[in-house]
Image (cartoon, rainbow, N blue to C red):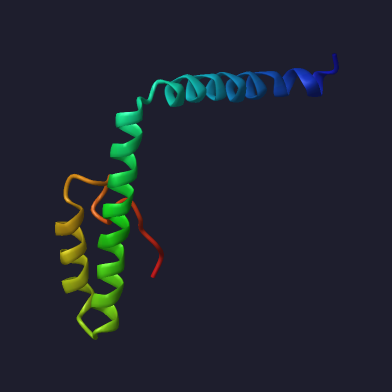
Amino acid sequence: MSLFSLQKLPAVASVLALSAVLSVAHAQHSDKETKEDVQRHRAMATAHEAAAKCLESGQKPDVCTKQLQAACKGLAVGKYCGMKHAH
C-alpha cells in the first residue's frame, strides 16, 4: 500500500462506520415513528407555506418569522423551523 492510500484510510474507515451507524438507526424506526415523522414534515411544510403567503401579502418579514416560529414550536430544530437561508 502506498503512503497516499494509508493517509486516506482513517477517512474511509470513518465514512464506513458512520454509514453503518446511520443504517442501524434508520432500521430502528417503527412504523409509528415513521408516521410521526411524516406528520411533522407536513406540519413544517404547512408552516412554511403560511410564511410564504404572509410575505406575499406584504407583511414585514419579522411578523412572518414570528408566525413561523409559533407554528413550528416543538416541530423542528432551531428558530427557523428547521430551515434557514441567506439574505
